[in-house]
Length: 186
Image 1 (cartoon, rainbow, N blue to C red):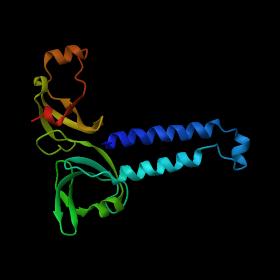
Image 2: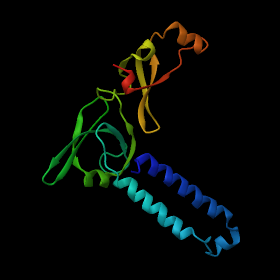
Image 3: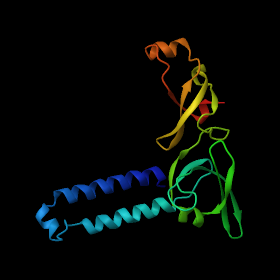
Image 4: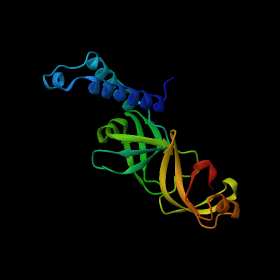
């Protein structure tokens, strides 16, 4: 089974090949509308890949960024997915905040979105500026600075309030922000 991340990697590979073909074509023939051999097939593969990425099922606890529609620019968490007679209804909510509403997959697709990553924590994704307790390596309390996706998993960039001595030594006396994942906080 091909994963969402595999499709994104394939898309990136196809786009790089397309760019390579365009650069390999002499400028004069490009000016006269002569396209490199195979470019039309490659364009079709890219379009098909994009269609497959957009058709991938949304999973609960996944972070998406809406790039169109009335919720333009908002980053939301996919909440519960309820099966109804009219099809599944997907709850969207703000990280660490209130529910925005329930939408069909068609409504979400109409708003267009970019998937960001899965959340490994047992509780909701904390909002930026909120405080969390990092249990990994007993790093202690920290403030969430931003969200970051690493290999398909949603992480948090945090600033530790009082990091252990070993952490400060490891970072030359500076309390640098750290990356933690949901399973590493309580």
